[in-house]
Image (cartoon, rainbow, N blue to C red):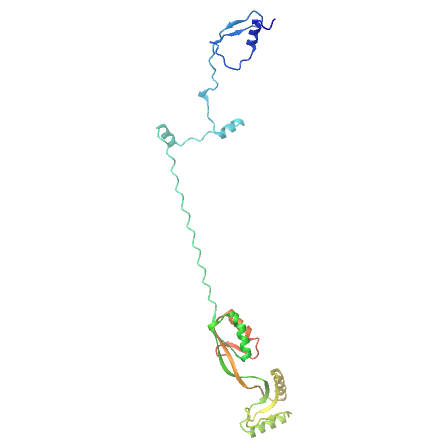
Length: 280
């Protein structure tokens, strides 16, 4: 069959898939049963479009319900609206929001108990240390400087003996004759090394038993005399009277007082205590 025959054109037109909608009332469609010469023109009635959805049976699903339906699980029923809201909606009035429950006020935080008052540190009204000679007084003040005592520290001058030696002796006797009798007693005890001091001596009619440069040496001699039966002997420091210094320190707390005591222990012949206790 020639390709340009009308039958071939009809066949091609009928078997071609239309990509655009065609109005059958305006454009006749040539239908061929498949045999040449049997094609005819027909006007196809337009059929009403079939409904795609049954709107009466549509059910709106929430997002989570839709996921459950896809998974094959029954969807949980949507929560029922409050009755008051339904009544208001049916009456055409906007539903009022449920009244917010009052937020309870935060409980008052109990006040922290007041700290127990700490007992005040003990304060010593007046501490006295001395006597110091001029050189020791300067060293003592330098060591007290970190305490920053200021006006709380004062010093006074006193006349004190500058000890150079220690004398083991029997105290001065009232007369020369009394001193001679005491010397006779010493000879009877076996003590022969002694000396009766003259009348113009500061220790008039005393009996000297030995002079020592250290106090420990004098104390050893005294112990030996006691063993021999001499019980009236004593040790007396010797030296000229010179100017010394006694310090008074007021209102010291316990740590500061302990520091002062530790400092005075580095000096020989120094006493420390409450005011009036330091002996020149």
